[in-house]
Length: 83
Ligand SMILES: N[C@@H](CCC(=O)N[C@@H](CS)C(=O)NCC(=O)O)C(=O)O
Image (cartoon, rainbow, N blue to C red; front, side, top):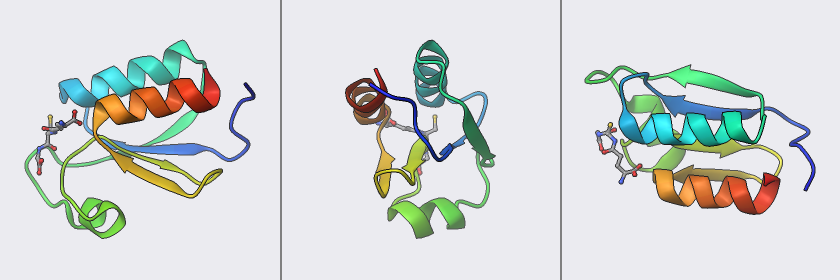
């Protein structure tokens, strides 16, 4: 399948193991993305606003109007759309 036309965004923080899983899948698929850095224990207002919950990772794909939490769902989504 083709690469995304518009850049994906990943709300995440470096030490989060679930975020790492998604970063590794993005790298494996050679997909460029914008990392939106979230405080490990701080303000999650933006994450809540866009996804309706406070957990990260959250993937935003403007190509399909998708906003998705849950690392396993994100990995499956990336495989399906860009794998
Ligand atoms: N089941 C989720 C777990 C994600 C998760 O627990 N993320 C932590 C950071 S490592 C978090 O954001 N916790 C705060 C919260 O859920 O509000 C996934 O696989 O993405």
